[in-house]
Amino acid sequence: MSYNDSVTRRMALRLSLSAGLAAGGSAMAAPPARRLEFWTMQLSPHLDDYVLGLIQRFEGLNPGVTVKWVDLPWAETERKLLGAIAARSSPDVVNLNPQFSAKLAEFGALADPEEHLSPGERADYLPAAWEANRLAGRCFALPWYLSTNLTLINKRLLDGKLPVSHLDLLAAAPSIKRQRGAFAYFPALDGSSPLETLVAMGADLLDARACGAGFINSRGAEVFDFYRRLYAEGLTPRNVVSEGHRKAVEMFLSGHVAVVSSGMQFLSFIRNNNPQVYRDIVAAPQMRAAGRKPGIAAMNLTVPAASRNRDLAFRFARFVTAPEQQLAFARRVPVLPSTRASYADPLFTAADASDLLGQARALSAQHVQAGEVQVPPLRNYNKLRSNYARNLQAVMLGRKGRDEALADVGRQWSQLLGCQA
Image 1 (cartoon, one colour):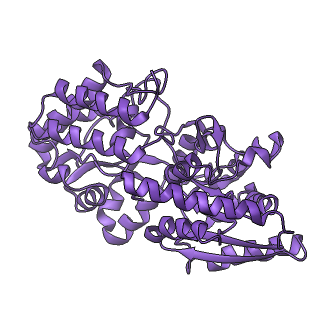
Image 2 (spheres, rainbow, N blue to C red):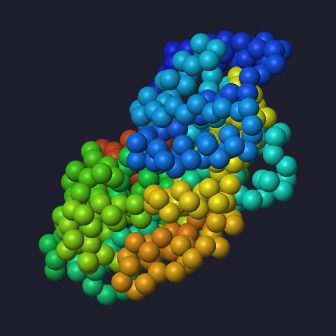
């Protein structure tokens, strides 16, 4: 989700949250109502029965408690939440992503789950998923559902050994273009993908103090060279600098790209839109350098600090993210649980040789259990991401030299991360 980090917006955010938090603090003097408001993002109508069933069971276990469910479009959630906090009508439990949650946590707008859940309760979650919701040492959310990318390969276009790393793919790219008339790869430059690829290729995102970029070195240079060669030698489509993941999937779907990094959820889309390409797909592990863990992404449940019912809100968030609830959720939609116990179910281990989606789910489950969040919550995340992507594009287009671009990134990241010397 996008978030404008301009000075004006930051001031508005600070003022809005301060007003809402002050109001929430004064409201705590009154006995809290036994009513919760639960916000999610785009789960209705296809998951109405699941969410309403959760609510009904929770209310049955907690007599006198009612839960109001509000489902919002992705694009509206941030604005509406800020408005609700400023208007002193904060919801009690909200589904967000870690980067926007971190922005709220920076201003003290989210309650800390570690003050409400016991160590034993926290241990139910995968450690990497729990740590995905931490900023400056403080936790700000419970992990809910997870996702991870796989390497989806069109075996008709890529003969021989499957690529283990991005450099393997670069080595195979000229023959794919020469023999098949196709491109090896469409590296998406939108979202967090470029930063995740940077880490997967063996570079460190941050320096040892987390006060600057950790890739202004030979590792980062190797990553920039990888992108520059792909583009300069015509081994990736020219529109890679202007279009992102959606275009990558589209070109893979049409048989013009041999390899794409994407989640298992896109396999159903491919199967429905091009059954021939679907029959040619192999789901392989994430391409990554030796010693690197698979990357994962997390969605979470937050409790705004302005909630009048924090203990009850965390009890509900804990209920929603319990292993049995997450397993039921994963049976309905292609997501992965954040709880350890859920993975004992055969859903994540058993896969027939002819069941591509089942194989992809089992491989994704392995990634999630062994993986890490490669791009953790960061201050000024959107600016950091945009600065990196712009410099990477400049190198690909020949507008900047590699070393000049890395130096520019290094200077800007040190300023944006805001550490004191």
